[in-house]
Length: 429
Image 1 (cartoon, rainbow, N blue to C red):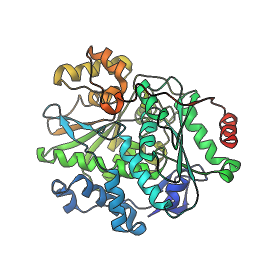
Image 2: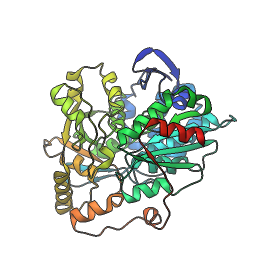
Image 3: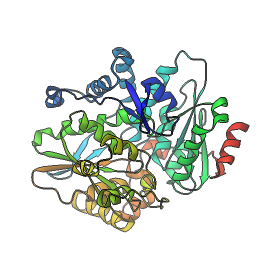
């Protein structure tokens, strides 16, 4: 598998280097040189394959001979140990529940696959890898769970102070061992900027072997394409066109869906569903891409003002706005409308959406009779307990994995958003 930089298609690396290096030296992002087209027979026969078999087939098509088949199958089987069910709310709208993994968020798929892949690449090396990851909520918990006690790898998670839910914060600040947390006085964009600047700093790269577990790392995107095939498999029996509505923050999830479409998955279109941080929906309607400082909302995982993966989408379509809008439309809600959507789904279907999934649900209001809309329910509603309970006026059961965190002590280093502070912390450790 060869990958190139979105800033320079002549700058190419293999899979191992792209995963371990994560961010391109020229500050671009790695893209697969070839996105293979799966056979029509395989797509037509998806219902006869298990989720793990589908994941292996996709991985093998993308990765090729870089990893022997038996080793790749082992990596897939270690990562995919939980389902991705589609729950139909009515005859046309389904929820793809992606929160059945250990951290109760869709990012478990990417984090666990990436952890297994990195462990495979470093198993015979005598060096320590330091993973830097910025999170607006769920990434941190998934990465912490995925890399917990993985030999030879330490993880440093940066998160914006006061802008993640209490339970999300506990997931990334209470494990200890090889997991460290930094509470940044700023936004997610500030955290992401610190990570990117660290990768570009020559002094830090002499001291540390740095990598990233954000969706800038191609190892996060590969497994996120798996569940689009798995979801499609579950609704094939209806014989209708399929639309995916994707709650979007850094746009890795939508990018993975577009990869799946390029690989032959017959998706009619995608909806990029956001909160008031609607940089991409605005671009889709105006043709003007204008990153802005992020604003805080109840759907905090989408509080991103400069989504990293958007450059991959532009690259995928050669910057052609008309081509992008044929496959992707935009949709957004503010907090009030998001709560209204949560109440609508609960009252009409007795279904509890988290604040991110609720925006995806509401975006499917204009389906034709020949379409099925699937919205991605990206995190368990209990991770946003106060918001969900107050919006719906109910008490919801907290899963055991979250409930066990309530009595644990948070351990995090508080820090301002200046790069010099972060660099000094890393050099003084």
